[in-house]
Length: 566
Image 1: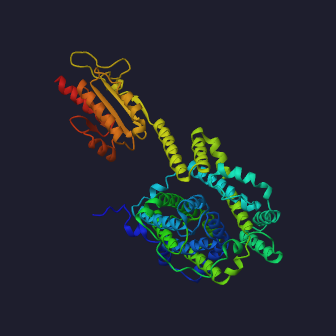
Image 2: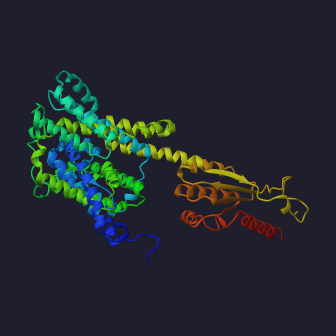
Image 3: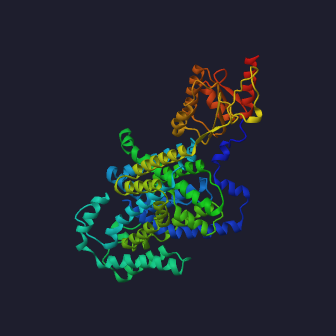
């Protein structure tokens, strides 16, 4: 018989598109989605090209990623408002993969990451991926922003480098500094103008598509003034008018093993980024996404993107938020955003050849600035030493070492910090088992109670909090203080919602010690889950006794005493 509290497979993996259509979908909904989709496409157009170029790919690959990946994410995803496409968070990983394995290696790694993401979703691990500490996400995002901005310095200034630009920040900065005498004034004017237009429109005309207007202005200036600066046309030969034919990436066992670490990094970062974006959308709308369904969709989207020579796909926070603010009703808006981008490359690809690379560098400079959660960063620095340490370690590793390493180490530090904090919340206190009015002299006239009315032969401990491995040692040291003089020990678990195997083993050791000393051990207030875990470690009668309350345990002990006296 199926547990009614557990969701079915269909409940977990039905795309939100199906849910929205079942609710009823009319022309008014289509109109809202069309407006939102067009708005997001206007934002995604320059961003997709800029992110792809910064990643070491072509602008066309960025558009293919947004079209194919974005359509699949919206059609199959577990979020009503998620917009998929290339993301700035992947720039470093994608660029490093291209450097190590070439473009074919990147496409294969994207394909494999899609399979991994789909497997993570079907294994229902999406719930656990969301357990990333807040200081980790803030530090990680800020670190990526620094890396993105550093990668655009050369494009913003029009520097001429003697060779390939190093990707590592500590190697990059000296190279850029040495190339400062080669600054190109025309490039600087275009990049500063792009940034000024974006920032100015955001302040004075926030409803206008600032990035598209800024990039379009740069392209217009390039066409009219024939400025001697690099453009998409001069650097990449323009953008093809249409999608390429799909093809399976070339692979071999050796190639798969070589790119597998990169694919795992793509999958890890993609799952975190996409679920974080879905959570942001939930917070803006009051809806709830299906995390495992979303990961499956992200996996299929990455496989689809790789078949069309695209790069990594993930949920994008900025475009998803734009979709929500534009009044989207459901996933159709994301599908239409992909179709609008397809229309652009079919109808207006020749125009893209005039877009200056300096304008796209200016776009990414603004994006990197906006990525930094400045208020959250400052708040965490002041919140506590532990949170500040997790934040700074994650930030430092992201900037100077490796993104995957930053996430793993940051998560580990955050987990240790959480364990420490949880271990300090559990407490043990003693309770007076019998009060004066309960006293009754033994038949020989000797009273078994002290002057306060407590029975010295019975010790009662109340445990409160989560009893787990982080607190087992401290709790065990308290409980071990019982001596052979006590006839009974009562341990109350009423305020303990959970015990793990370490805690159960601690109680089992206490029970064995009590038996050797001839002390009766009674456990009270245990929930079903706690009783099950304790029982798995052999904690059952006659080794221990269970009672619903402390009072019931004391009654049981009184009866035992009377029976012995009789």
